[in-house]
Length: 164
Ligand SMILES: [Zn+2]
Image (cartoon, rainbow, N blue to C red; front, side, top):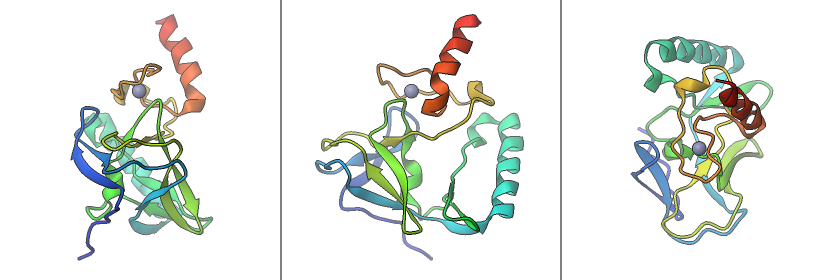
């Protein structure tokens, strides 16, 4: 069995945003590589199957709609939906303080701001607009759009919501 990833910077706790979350154990300066996002290495074809399966599942039950796949390189992706990937608990925020970055073929969750001890870590899940209503956001930031969509789509979503 692979042991769960640990980081000197963070700990898993219950979150007000969504089930569990990842919280700073100490002050984390911007640009720190906080925790690696690990998982099973899969091919692009396998990734596509998981995406399609998740789409089907999310139509039946919205809580199964989460996707944990990151691109590693041209050939392989990583499926982080495994118990030993502690970083999968990081929640989405409309005003995130971290960003997943591919560093030499490894996905790292990197701080984009100075994070204070006790703060919850978050990054932009980068969801597109499809089925946005199935992914409500409770991040609590002042500019929360109410749904989990990537930053590039937030203005479009706000206009869409105004029209309703
Ligand atoms: Zn939000």
